[in-house]
Image 1 (cartoon, rainbow, N blue to C red):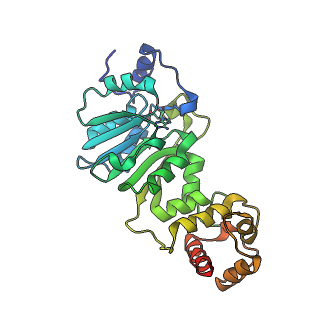
Image 2: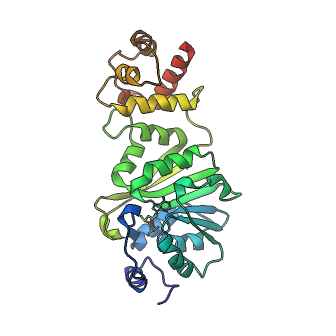
Length: 286
Ligand code: SAM
């Protein structure tokens, strides 16, 4: 077995998997990339250079990691599956700028990963895309960008604007923290095994300052979550139904009227700037 072989070539991935008798674990969202064009697009899209520190979430057998080690200054690869660690130690043996951590990314202290601000690059496990992205943004760890493969539908939600069916709490969180750009659409045949859904690579470039400055960011996101908890209801009704908020119907309708919004407006109509204004106006009442 030639462990220095580039795993992006499907025959090398297949040979490695056979040699190690590795069985894919669905519960960890394991779909390994085997398309060199997509790999190039990820590396180019992530704009990585030798001055950069990269965090890779879920290196798998090390396919993307090999390319990241060649492009970046330092790479930290966090993999939950214990069975993959001995494989990674072999497929990445040629690189001295990589650190492999056997851990659940959702439990890791991200601020301890590097002295430098991070560029996150990953082919994400789809079952935890949203908690990973939200965890990265909310961790407060210094981040420059997040370039990730996600389910196509999730990429669309991240980029959605008010009024559409894809618009929701994730769209607003992404807008608040970053500029989103879809870099590539990726069909299922670019992976082993093939996922049941289409995928897309999206780059989220962190804002230096958020586009709105609500007085209390946490409160604004509480309102956003409440607003989309029951999409079909009016904003007033969803906010009235949230037990952690205690505004009367009259108070809510008065605030909406002051913002020039109808009493029966739904949350999906409000922009980020409007949620920030709503948040400040409601806080002023308490
Ligand atoms: N990077 C590889 C590639 O592109 O071929 C593998 C990508 S695969 C879609 C997702 C990887 O994330 C798997 O290796 C899986 O074991 C790992 N993973 C799943 N849940 C994880 C978690 N909570 N923390 C860290 N890694 C995780």
